[in-house]
Length: 308
Image (cartoon, rainbow, N blue to C red; front, side, top):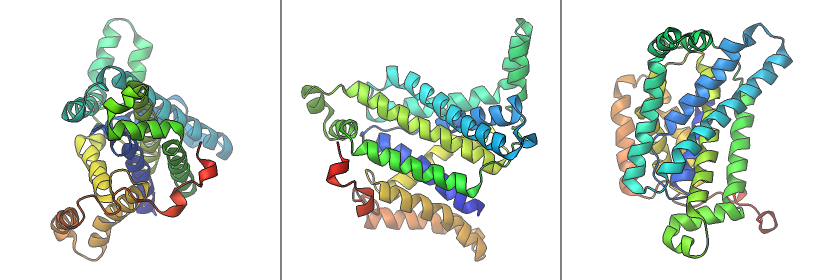
């Protein structure tokens, strides 16, 4: 069951990354940084600020949902702040900045003890105590198991529906026009920087929510859980499924999450790191646009009367 929940979280992360890379035509590789922000923000509310483990069911559920939303909002705000000065960059330059952003977030949390000591020295004792409780270099443990299957499933489905509706809305069309040719889009009066930031913030929001779910499934988080390797995993799911395809993101994130575990179950554990890359190489040789390219299942395409 835990593997299925990780697959659902990976679907949410991949579809949200697809909004930036696949539908808006940007190249972000720092998605794990937003996930990290969401995970630590959510865990801060449920584990450090409030003891959710000792609460009754409904207050606990309400706190968890609140913590997920806060994790998403803080990640979206970080995406907005990062996006403002950097989204005028393109291609490799934007990729390097987003990658560096993810590593900065991870390094700051890893250095929480030093930051707490500094705050204590300058008299900000209450802030110092809060930062120290994050336990950055040692990892944050005792996170309550609040990510039940139905919650992860519901949030994942909701995130897909919201992003699908955004993509097929007027705003989504503007993002698609930026992907096709941002100079032409700007000539037609589309504020390209504004729409890039909107796409970036929405994507970061759902990455933050995914991080919150991830923290409460794993019940222990460490900055190394959100290294650039994690971001690369989501890029692999995205390219394997097809840029610009929600269906492809869902299929690839599910398949490539379950495949290593399936190989482990059938006693091919020692061959996992051979079979997995070989599968990706063959897939990219045979389907360079990904499994689905930019195609969708019909139920993921809104009817004409739903599109505004």
